[in-house]
Length: 167
View (cartoon, rainbow, N blue to C red):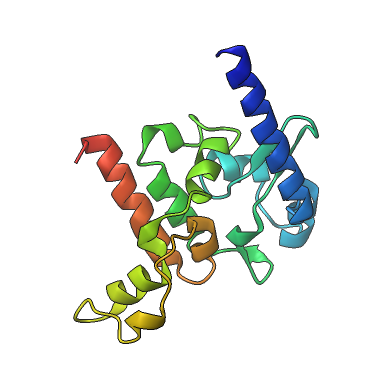
């Protein structure tokens, strides 16, 4: 990696660190406490693709994007999402143990997740009734997962198929 590329990468990670702290991303101890004493080992859950942790080397800890939790528990569709992402060989827990590659995918705005695209997809005739008032601005999978997890899972599957087959 070139020196300027390395500097940009370090800056990007630093910005994410600041963002994660500002947004209150919990660390492993906080998650373990929230999930209770009977929760499975978080490292095992990350390795099994049941939980996404993002490694922050300056803190020497994993932090967990909050959108993957619902009512204090792991979102019921999270393992399905992570399994779908793992259809792309670069996004398996083994290939991405620090979670950064999956985080980039989850934080990249997609036009197919805009209000308009989701409404058109839900409409039986493919035309949203209130088309004129809906935004066509792309949203991130992480943002949409909170209220339409299955749309994000479907996108992850489609992307993984595209990567693995080139079609």
